[in-house]
Length: 291
Length: 249
Image (cartoon, rainbow over all chains, first blue to last red; front, side, top):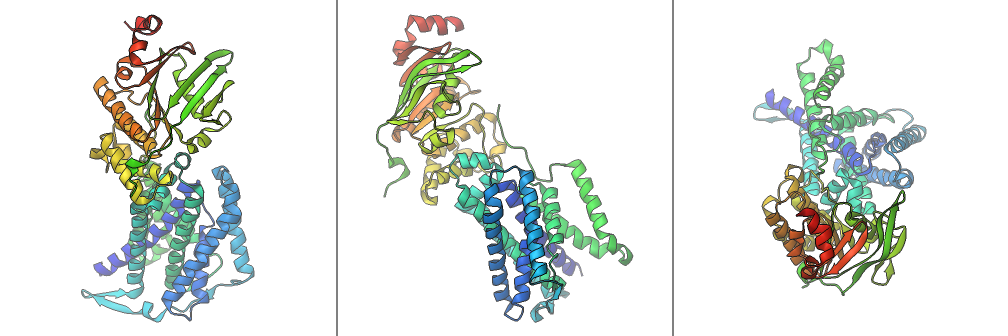
């Protein structure tokens, strides 16, 4: 029972952490609060629907391709021309991109919610150390955990990661040092595309359907988790997302059935309490200046 | 294989000819001609308000000259922005150190090396060399936001060196450090810059620091050049003694 809960909680935490990193990365590099993030998740989820008859790993690969292409096209068409715009303009542009993509999906491929039959192996349950665990929960945990490790390696151990983190912390200073905007910005969009595709694929498997507005809730989770952890810190954002996911799983397990409908009310009350104590988020720190 | 240390460039000169800037009618810099040659350390000294930082700002492009021209060899930089000049190899640091707080010291330096176009391996080699020379290797894995103010400044200088400048303009790099630490830091910068034939312009108010570390000195007072020459000649110049030493002792 405890192990089952732990796998569920850590898996959901890892999924939410992926979603929040996607939000925080673009916010750091571009100052962009990207409300079109949900539509990247939608692009990945739609690919899972489109390739539902193909092997799951192939559908997942296609989800990554779809989400990365949509991410790069939106960067090129909408955000690239606004690269030096202020954050409010960027945010409004992201609303426009979000609504345009959502409407396009509704008019063309997703006029109504489509059911995606769960992949057979995901609906199995296995016994681990005497606990009855859902394979879907295990896959969520392994896939999202693995992606977090890949992101941690990419950010911590590679040249691109160093430049991305430098740009995420102070884009102007990074570019004055020669860090190339045309490298880090599209790279950030590609990473965000991959993260949202994985998120979209897992969400489709968990809820068994795809709808044009399915990106809204994970996008909000990403934003809330990133605010909780600290928008200007990728580690903080991941922590915020993880705590949000784990707390969601905890509330689902502990709350009496008639109160589960109010889960989010409990969750966001706790969030407000945390932000009253640390308005800058859990891990956000001030920039270093010596004067 | 070419190592980071062996990289060298042809001899060049960064110079300002008859440069000046006025603020609301006040001449902060008035007809100053100054030049820095590759491989040398030029100390720019003078009392408070003499125009040292303004001169550095004119050379780096942070301020636009109201008169005169700025040259990098035969290229006229007068209308170039600070970023354009940085791309040409004219790099500056600020009196207030500014670093990426959440990156480690090593990553701060490495980011600049990568930004300058070095590959990962070459960038790492250069980073290690700079960290060792500026005595930052002991804190290489510390996040910059955990450092003391002096170390933050040194990290900012290390990062400027990693950008492989042709000319490095330093505004009081050793501010807040005692004389021994200041001399050690500037000597390290000097050694590093000389091996790469990088010219260094050093704004410093402490005469005892610049005397032992600079090849030449350029003395300003009230925005004008008083004298320029070898440290020994400057130290014994009566006008310098009058306006500089005279005011301090």
